[in-house]
Amino acid sequence: MVDTVTSQTIVDGGKIVVMSFTNASDGTGEADVVKVDVSELADIKGPNGSSTEPTNVKIRQIWYSTVGMSVRLLWEASADVLAFVCPADQNGYADFRSFDGLKNNAGTGVTGDIGFTTTGHSSGDSYHIVLELSKS
Image 1: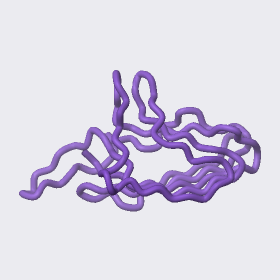
Image 2: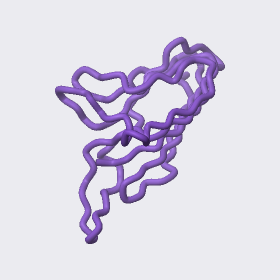
Image 3: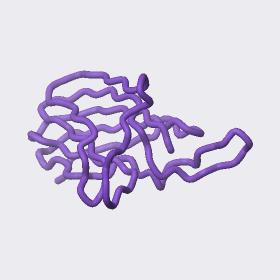
């Protein structure tokens, strides 16, 4: 058996993306599972009707609720880089818009994607995470 997970794109507009993720764990957990695949996002719309394929995202806002486990958000690359941690047994909100969002600072092999890894998971644990991202 595996964890029961959902990924939902709420908005994928010209520049902003809002996505929701849930996990109801059977104790298996997730290890570096790509949740935001930049290649699947809609093109960025320019002011003159032009469009550009996004290659990266910035994290603007995060809403999270965790029960029993923490979730590590990772910038995907040859060596993944930690972007943010949603701590275990917490409800929280983080707003990074005042400085234009958390920028992907991964090095070699950067993909622009975001992966999740759960830690401390056991059967019955869960998370719900909503990300607001800006495409670039």
